[in-house]
Image (tube, rainbow, N blue to C red; front, top):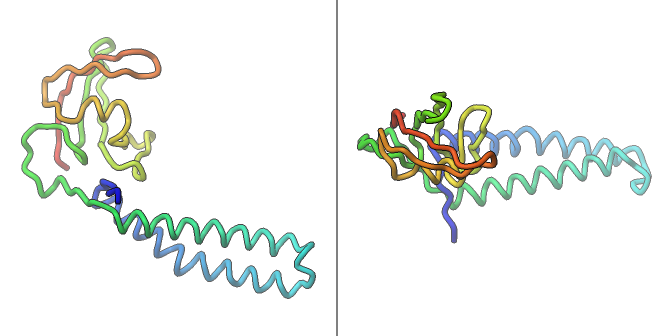
Length: 158
């Protein structure tokens, strides 16, 4: 059985999504199916088939979330002493040694990753290259554009 690392915030967001699916979305879909059935012949009823497809997607997502939450390992860096090492859940500021551009990433679980919000998966090349390193370490990370050299500027346990 695989466990999934997740931040406390990520687990809370999945719980909220699960609650929304079960208490709001599922009843809406059931009503849509009932309404579509009232229109008669189900073979040629596009509304019915669309509602059934929505129901299938919703139930699949519920099962997926419940499966992940049952195997989740919540890691809360706020409860850990900051020893300066980059670990799962930390916020890391790095500087591109070539361009001297600074960027701050938070290392999170796969389900929480969103590069637009600078949340990177622990399984991404950048995170794998940073985990275990400390402030002032220089790391070479293979990216699609080639190898990039980063210097770790700051590690925060927030």
